[in-house]
Image (tube, rainbow, N blue to C red):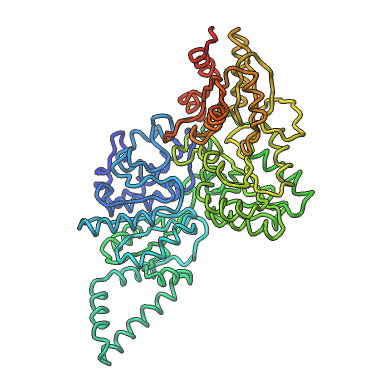
Length: 615
């Protein structure tokens, strides 16, 4: 075995070339074993094993700056940079993060979770290197669809202006720009990197005012460009126009070629993009056959039932779309995550997957709404942050009927700090014309989606990750009240939304079982516009208000209620059970709720401590 328990980066450098394929096989098996147990991103990491080995054979991860994009491609890198002995803790509480983290290793140079940040960060690192007169290579490792995002394209457009060298490694694991892989690509890379060729070309350019040298220079250009046109895909001209030298396409699983090309790029003195074809899910047959399904897998033993995503998808596919031909769906490379596969199959002309391009998607939805359609945008809460301006400027200010279905709202567990859905209420609450709803079960989700499909204003509907709550709330809400009373009580009112409503119902049940108190339970179904009339009635009837929710406390419901109480001279006791403004570390969602006190046990204990009511 090459991967010994104390394996480190220095051990990799000692492994002879003929043993590297054995190492790749061991790394793949370690990823398969760990990810199928803990959950995580499987397919993309399996596809970059050889590229990662070649990169670490060529560059020094402690001195050079390697920036992953998207970050979930970094599993082989973690294993090979002094973290093999901890890899089995991947995505577990207090274990390794599923993304690069500068706090985790000196080999991680930039925190990445959202896609398409690597080239911009690499350019920043490169200019810092130049200004500080340092000697180090800067590498942006991008792929898995991230190159098409607007941020990446903006960065590519700026490479020429920086007049500095970076190396871009493109992991093309799904839709290859071209399938022309072969020896000519390597020959062209060697020619481009050859110092004699570059010096000769530079000499002829400097003396091109003389006819003889001008003819030679044009001849070299013609031969070189003609060779490129034979072996390079047409789209590669895009990089040439941006003054980024394009080398490829190469086989990303041929270790010898990968190592050779990266060494040539290391010695090259200009910006260069290395285009490698890889197979997503390489080495794991189920992932090879279905790379979409195995892009991310759930932890072993996780109990699965009907999810919020499935319910939302089925409501629009089976109930709303058949009755309104203007209803369409959009998503940004998350069709599987938000469960829209059936909608796409049933209504192909009314479904748009725009790729990793959230900003574009929101403005496209605005255009569709302005043109007379009823767009439903399905997006994760964490990715909606990337389109805040478009939601505000292009949708809300024009008061267009776009429904934003915000999946993964709240605590999302092991994806870590970059993927939590805790900000949407805080910033979206400030957007004019926008209505915000938070269903607590499938019944309320259905009611809200039906209502939103007929509302002539922008609507945001947020719902959590994971399994639906079965609350069996039988409350008539024909008047579209913002706060629904589920149970009456004595002195104490528990107010929550989404998952917190389920937690509050369990709190009431536990408090009654222990004969401590009998609280009322209210479901905050509409966050904006907030139902202040209902709030006043609650403040009049109950002495203690406990407000809970999976959102940041800054800009949350407790802050809004506190301001209302102060303004209107209410002296009720207000206790908040929301998430403090902090970076949320990876753990299960339940563990995160326990950390931040959003549990029945903590709610009861806190009420006893902070109120006159004694056990």
